[in-house]
Image 1 (cartoon, one colour):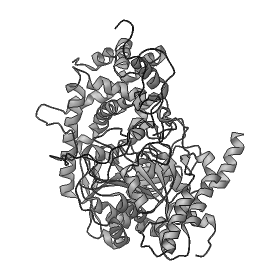
Image 2 (spheres, rainbow over the protein chains, first blue to last red; image 1 turned 135 degrees about the vertical axis):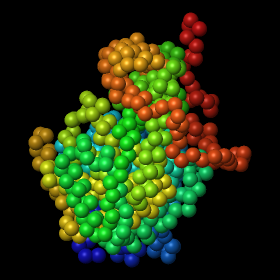
Image 3 (cartoon, one colour; image 1 turned 90 degrees about the vertical axis):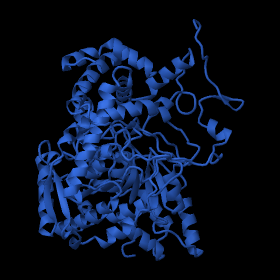
Length: 515
Length: 107
């Protein structure tokens, strides 16, 4: 390839890396080393990784050897990727960002991890996250916050801040994320990257450290829509180990992304703007880019209609009853007996368990577990959890009505751009509102995607367009998303991430100030 | 169930938080109990709005995409070995999880 410098390798989208690998113009060892070097160069400050694999180069060498021997390999064979630390890996410690699992080496691989290994992707390491995915800034990680490569003093979003930041920092071309209320999409918005939350049940959750079982979903994080589609193709599909897994035969999302990467794919597309998620409460700079994107879509033949979803204003309230309730149950497994931390205190097994959870859980986890315990307690169940489940029905009905008027729905992915670290650390309620636009999708189980559409004129930070499709219609996201991406690229003259500041220089400046 | 917002907030007392922490097996400090009492009251004030629209005639949704009869053959498959199952345990002995006393002195 031309300009084979390590830096140039890390800038390549996964699809182009894969082509070079398949053509023998680049080895997986070279590609993997370039990314490991980049991690070594920038991650002390970015803190996207909680663990870097010590055998990624061996995995890469094995892929290279098998390719050289003529073995037929998958489309992403040899491409490095990062794995959110919510997925259990038998060869790398798994913590979910919590002190209670510090140093835990799981005895098995999550199904999606098995799938990416079988597809010969090269795991680089485990990415930082809010503890047990509770948060939207990654500041709730027990291992320190991740910093946004666009501005090192700002949040990358969360809970998957590490999986988004590593892409914008060119430490990995692909990452796996999990999305319970927006943890893939909101960080994608804040870092100028692409994130997809598939239909509930579309991707296996076996081996995913559970937060809220009726909401959690695994999905791809990438720098382009095509790259996300390529990874989605690898991880999608039924898994007998996950009883919520759908038996769907999914189309190739990569083929759809390739064939739709052109404004002509927008001709006649009915796009519904969700009024309640697109006006009040959205920062002016975000709203401006959102409105301009709609104008661009309309100019290329999309039919823009406004839809109303009157119950989405109740979504955050319902979510903060359903999620804590389910989390309080799921997190009961951290009992100081089977894995993880055990506090060194005397007394009964219950005393040890209570002391362990006091020492091992952070503030937000304690807050939600106790809130969930309350919401599920006798006498309050009907008033809180039961009513929240009814709101869920109302939101599903709102979506059903809206999808009668439009093929895809849109809103800004989040109401704000990346804000300074520390802004909401002492105000949990304020932070809960970061996910106001993404939460309804999880409550309804439908798929959603964030695609970067520009930089806010107020602060020069990334803004994403949130696309939503009916359950099982993930394909629509890739069609519309690829077209939007192509249009924005044409409009701007370059991919959005070309505008990310020189990270090495930014780190040097940041370290001088910190000193 | 208390009806007004003021009653609901008043319902969250330090004693209730301490009781919930006991149920959740988290040994909170006194300072944490005080802080959580205020925060949980505020959060519950905000989430209580679900009552405005969750009327009798609306059925609850527990699962976004319901599946029925998800069965598998009743055959042993894909199990962890005893060694694997114990590999992450803080303490184990003779192939079993080892714990502190199950009963306190007064029990």
